[in-house]
Image 1 (tube, rainbow, N blue to C red):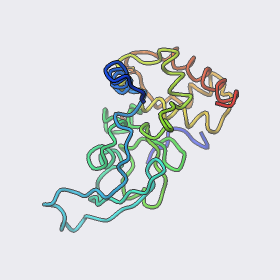
Image 2 (cartoon, protein in one colour):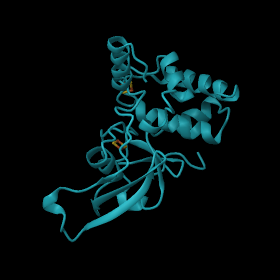
Image 3 (cartoon, rainbow, N blue to C red):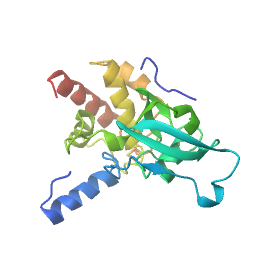
Image 4 (cartoon, protein in one colour):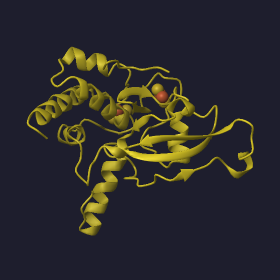
Length: 209
Ligand code: FES
Ligand code: FES
């Protein structure tokens, strides 16, 4: 398992804001779902009796989930294909881009490199869990305010890495931010905007938000 940082709503007047919510999700700032799905998911019926299928439970965005997985499933495919949490993206699938970043017990990890079975009894946080009661997390708000995304494909992973950084460092230097985000690649080159977003989020958090 690679850890790339160490002890590193929607309101609606229907049409407009539904559209705005969809736009935010497409931009990667908010997960594609605000999921309440915390039930039981399973592998395909044909695989139910496979010798390598195991029952697994962990806490996903504050809610217990139970899922049956094959022992070789990654956390990323379990989230995306079996728990309908598609915010974390599959890009390189070998730990090189950070698009799949989620927090495992508070530490940013590449979920494409984490086996699902490693998560038994642990806490997993994804982009879908950041907003609370429709209120975006300060990092999400800062990404919007600083226009810190273009295509948005790297954005969920970037935001989770930024959250992890700010959870352990209230006012990171630019060097510390660069180091914490070194495992997250943005093909659109929004790094300066992301730096400004981290600065803005740090100030917002210091102000009690
Ligand atoms: S998809 Fe996991 S690091 Fe690229
Ligand atoms: S916003 Fe396009 S890859 Fe980062």
